[in-house]
Length: 463
Image (tube, rainbow, N blue to C red; front, side, top):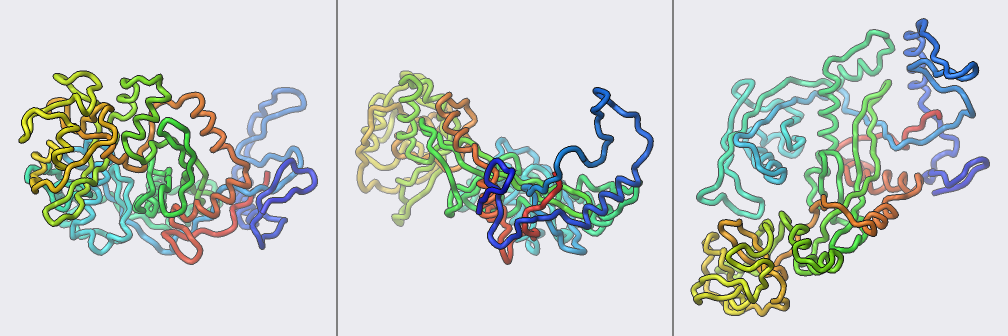
């Protein structure tokens, strides 16, 4: 609900049933006054004129008219008496990409030592693991060998890479110790592990969004829903979309722990046929294939046209490395790229017409008899290499689906930037409704349950 009051310049956010006259916490105000009183001491005045001086810090601003503001903060209520255990994890060799690093952590959590906490253990997917119970390690540290395989693979390949995971405990963190420090008004109050505890709370808060399928995580604390009815996006043209997401940050304050929740926006590749994406980008980059090749490099794509011996669809994920490699001509089309096969020297387009199984399946050991051919609808577009420069593997882009949730890090055009800015530019009441509604659901905090408990309404402060 939005309304105007005398003297305001725009709509004000107020949920149904809440009083218009919101007030800051009296307990917090009293404690802050006590802290300020304990810290008063002679301080040189810093004046910029005879009439204006800088206020001594920390203190309250007193000039002007006193008003009350809602903030984009919630009062986060940790479980009383809760203790969590903090671990450092290292992989040897290290993962080559953040996607593989995330997969290594998920494989690690399949180890029996995590059996009792698998549904509640949290990680930043870099090096820190937070567990509500102490893990049954033989000593302070322990090593495990992990055989890597992707989420779309049922079992590891014969030559799968192996990583050694080292887990070491750094100690236990007690919520009571943190709250004792936050509740103190003593001038010399301190808590040596405040930074570690704040980090742990941030990791725990991010757990729900980090483990929800269809939610993309960026920088550890930005979350973008792409499915489930919570997604909001706009087409920026050229195969790029902007998705609305949410930023989280746990912060400590007088008497309480606060959860900062805000709205953010980022650009992503559109999840569509790769051929469709290529043509959209071709139309806005001067119809130059080199621009398109740069745009799609490293994109992760999925194919579903393959079937196993029982007729079940086989999903395969590949990374695009570019277009045709020498000795093929640059930007060679599906009609022009040729290779040796069981049918002799044949083009990619002709090969797919003869058989629905592509050349690279030799390496995947899928050799069922072909049942029917695939007549390509766009044989005159460049063939896409999903192999390497040394061992190219060419696919028709119309048979590749761009995986959802891939961040577009390349520079946006002026038109794309303008569209994205209009999409992101919203009034404070609109953002407040978004935070209280969709935002809390994305991070797993809902009425009557969720991974964390917050106090409603949004925190009020004096301004």
